[in-house]
Length: 118
Image (cartoon, rainbow, N blue to C red; front, side, top):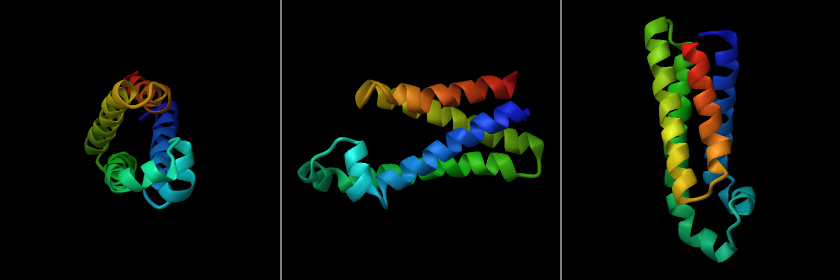
């Protein structure tokens, strides 16, 4: 993988580590504020957000495997899979939740994918 592709892919992974933390361990404090939820709404959606955080953790795992797997073909497959999943999830989130998700999640993943294939 080219250096710039690695850097942007690493950025996507770090963004998702932050998202995992916001949706799980930091949800009642910082996460609630970032997502603009009242305490009452946060109490209702907390289990679903924790579940969503778990799924985002799997996206991070795929990207990490892409960085560490010794076989370049397998590493590339994990990277492409992880970035494609992030991009699709970002589009879905942008359509169903908040348009800014397209910039925060989808755009970096698409850029990393483009750089990966450049």
